[in-house]
Image (cartoon, rainbow, N blue to C red; front, side, top):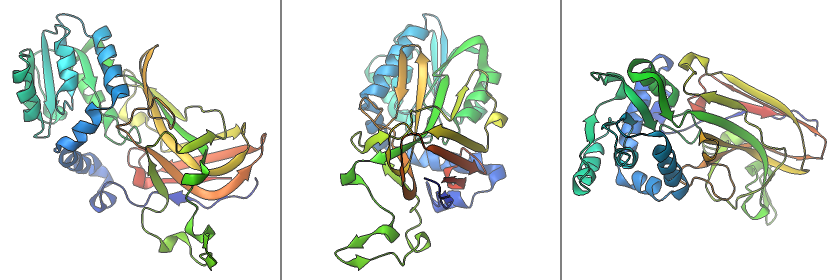
Length: 330
């Protein structure tokens, strides 16, 4: 494949208010949207029935939270991670959330006779404690990995309120943006490539389609047929050492195609590691964490042979903010 494909971008995400937010004040705008989204129990129900997510967190907390520890659960929601920590005989768990959903968590704690959790409705940046804690537990992970201000919020708590040598659960992350072929029954071509019962849409270009045209949400593990290349992280970091200013504004790779076929787009997903044998993945195959969707970045359909070189580049005004993502391949 040797043609250079047109740059695409995510034109809308979360809400139109976010599209127009001030980059210098992006966190405060996101906080409002996030708070509203997680006020509703339906979001928490989806997380609670995600067995891959819940079982991984429970196993990691059982391994790394020790009797007598003090713990912050950042973004506690309905409290499940705080309760896991409390059951490890933690001395005290501070369950933090800026959403009113935290009062649901308090009801659950009372009903289950869990008395070593203190619930605080506050944004974590306003949290102050008398002494630093041993462990930070969190699920500040967005569908695009970085889009819930995880790095900024965790770094703030780490630097102010975590003991030296303290633990962050989870702390190790890999972002993947992988070229894939979609199974034929779920492949959605660009509209300009469609011909439906003799009606030719080739006169149309993407700018006349709906504003979310350049990407598709996916959650079904049976959607992706295969990767064209062997998966490799495009970006990796550890919350123990990263700082917010370290996040890049461009990502790229060149890879040799291992599996010939049609390129339908690039799947965005992540892997987070708690330990060598405990991890969560949102990759598009079996045993994925279902409470996160993965995203298909669309490109013009292209065909690659084994051994072809596939080049991908993504640029962003802010990698945490997917509407600023722009990508192309050749």
